[in-house]
Length: 134
Image 1 (cartoon, one colour):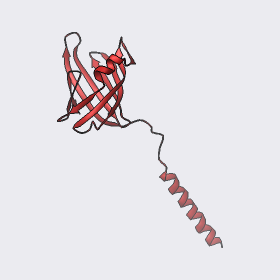
Image 2 (tube, rainbow, N blue to C red; image 1 turned 90 degrees about the vertical axis):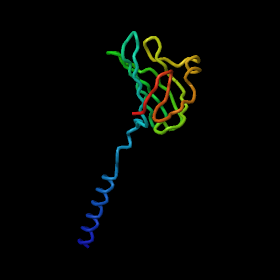
Image 3 (spheres, rainbow, N blue to C red; image 1 turned 120 degrees about the vertical axis):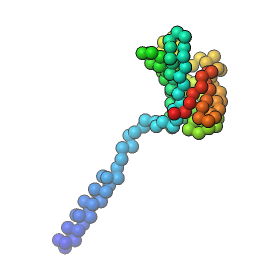
Image 4 (cartoon, one colour; image 1 turned 135 degrees about the horizontal axis):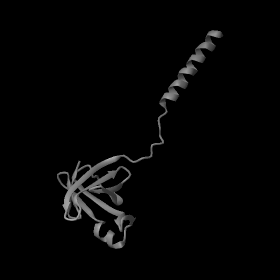
């Protein structure tokens, strides 16, 4: 009987070790990056401007900009389609940089930017600027 008790104790210990090792951190709710596009251009007033559009797997997009020592989030929104491949994506702007801060997108902003965009050869044109997939 003692031998059976020892075997059962060892079996229970192994099961607990496997159960503990099988746990992972499911608390990671941060979206992961699907695709990143970058545009760089010259502006007469501020010099070199770099804008980076990051598409996340929760179908959100964030566009950040940098000019000199200034950095800002220029736009946030949602998208449909697959930006990691050539094809069509549809954007919907929710927030837009205006007056030095990010504000809710107005109907005029939505009318201008909420539409389909075609990615060809890893490039897409948005607001007159060519963005290249990184």
